[in-house]
Length: 437
Image (cartoon, rainbow, N blue to C red; front, side, top):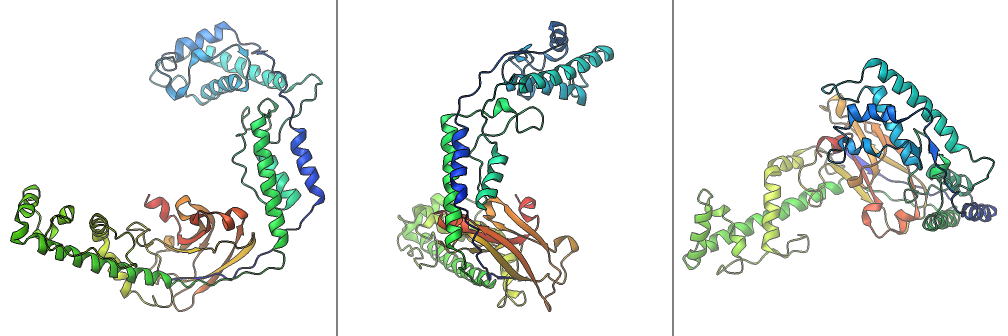
């Protein structure tokens, strides 16, 4: 049983207006043209090394067959861009790892391979020094994603998603390679847009100082969804049964015989009469109760029955579980969550909640017969995107549930976003997403 309880408080970030001018100065000073790139030679590597690679590797890495999307003929002894250097780094990595050539191909003689690895290693070290040496010239470079995100956080106290900025490429694991941190007009726009977003976020947090917002969500809301599902099931199966009776009448004999010919092994009550709903004389009206979402045509009614039928007996067992009027059980995912979210408990934050840091508390207990590896819960945002925020071991019992506390950062994107999924909180069994997808 899991019971959700959300008493949450909003805390505004400190507002530092003096830093605003620094922020935009920081952005504008990077708006310089990219320093002219110079060609570099790969010191110590010559045609002899290229010939050796062509002899043993070109059969798998050529124009017609580029295994791993890599071609030997694209290697150049003159390095013009970072990408050229990265291709040689990949060669060195593959040689050191013993991946090239593969075991079933002719191998490079040991001494020649050792010389190639030594020469190429020294050449790449020398190349890295050349490419980072600006010969006394001072060229302005943009901040990379990590630096810009950290700068915004330190200046304004907010976390901003910076994924729209260019990816940080460089040699090896470096993300501050000057040759890749050039700036363009489009990138300036991206930096300015994120800067404005950070400032607006900080203003909202400043205005939200002292504002407390709280809400309590009862887990047994899921039990109500189960009952609504079974009500929908009864209405849809009764409708299909009445439609089958009407379709089997003599007045509809032509339709009946046509369906029986196509589906000779099906019982009459399971024939797809819904396909001829408009033609069947005496056909019952489609259920029109507002509670039956998507029931606006016969096809959808039949689709609901077909999707629910394999799990119907399992789902019915839920109503026999204990204490479902005071909480809810999280079970394994079965039917589509739009019909019934069996695999998680959800809560949608109301739109317009002020950005800030919120506390989240929920009461949880494990079933008495739960194995040790199934006593963990995941808490997060947007269940479809698997935005996991925290994981928790459940030690409470049905007789003595525990209260688990965690936190949540709400931003302008969550509170103002038109997409309802952005405000979806969820609790589910740990690892369940990966087991069933």
